[in-house]
Amino acid sequence: MTRQPSEDLIHPKAEKGIDAAKQKTQKHTSHDRRIMHVDMDAFFAAIEQRDNPQLRGKPVIVGGTKGQRGVVATCSYEARKFGVKSGMPLAEAERKCPNAAFLKTNGRKYTYTAIKLLDIFHRYSPIVEPVSIDEAYLDITGSIRQFGSDRKLAESLKNEVYNILQLTCSAGIAHNRIFAKLASGLEKPDGLTIINREEVAVKVFPLPVEKLWGVGDKTAETLHKLGITTIGKLAKYPLNILKNYFGINGEQLQKIARGEGATAVVSIKEREDEKSIGHEHTFSGDVLNINAVMQRLLILSQKVGRRLRSRGFGGTIITLKLRYSDFETHTHRETFPEIFWDDREIFEAGKVLFKQIYQKKRAVRLIGISVSRLFRIDFESEFPLHQVDLFSEPSRKKEILPVMDSLRDKYGENIISRCAANV
Ligand code: DCP
Ligand code: CA
Image (cartoon, rainbow, N blue to C red):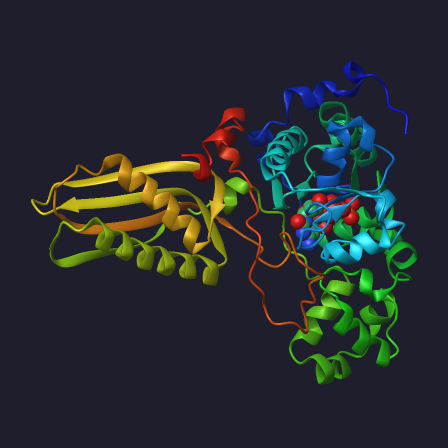
């Protein structure tokens, strides 16, 4: 698609950013709220095509090289024409599209881009809620006036993303999150779909029910058996029958179809929980054997990880507490660009911190580890390995460590190189 030269594309108001305080003082009822959902197109593959012009316009499959075991993380739209999709075994992708370029994932590069992206989003609203590495909700209610209309705001954002990152994204705008997300997927790639409240009957209700967030194959199958093929049918279906089939989820399912189940967009700052999750252990005697201390640290890290995950949190600060036999106590903390919830990662980071402060040959009395600056993590939707079916599948933990940065560090570019693996 053709785009204007970059100087023109940064909206003058966007350049200054939106004054968070001003936005907060504007009162908006949930009735007139405008929510935008932005989702990058073929994110990892598009980045690879951007960085290697020879790959542009060609099928690109990211996830591993030819012959490697593993699954497709994503693929370019050119590869999708051959039936390749995320989560598919690489071997199958190779059969379907033998001429594609097969590339390993490059997490650091994608994270760097994701951080830049969130920086751009914050020019358009102070209320930005990232939900995965390439997706975020923005509450643009208070910003629209400065751009003239929601469409102009979205066009400005899309142009800015393209000019700064040379990537396209798809945006959807509606009065709630569910329809905003639905809208962003309707005209992918490089789409922009706006759904106004009065257009729901025309633009949303005729759509297939499986387009709704959270409705996966199994739920759709049951809905189809009931003759519910469209979102509109689900929105109007007798609730008692839905409850018979889906239990308490029946009501939630219908609410989603009506766009009622959606909650407000929660900005990163609000989501933060200053509390920390941690565990410590006092040894019964003083310990000089560092392996024993490390073993205990691993157990503590596992406990912390488990608690984080069960509460749906991840955190970016790791704090290690160390007390020597003479009760001299040290705490050492570090902010990382990753969000930690994985036991092993917590342990590895803790071990590094321990090594940085431990004075050799001193006996240890207590060891503790905690994770703070907590973020609520959507364990289901971030890096899903397959379409998540909220209403019929049991909760599944993430299997891939996504690298989402904490924005509060002001997106410092070099913080990426400080990630745990490199310390
Ligand atoms: N991802 C992954 N494994 C999956 C799904 C996704 O590693 N099973 C990664 C690669 C994707 C990125 O997350 O590029 C974003 O996921 P999306 O589901 O948003 O997919 P894309 O952005 O690649 O494509 P689309 O244009 O359909 O949004
Ligand atoms: Ca995407």
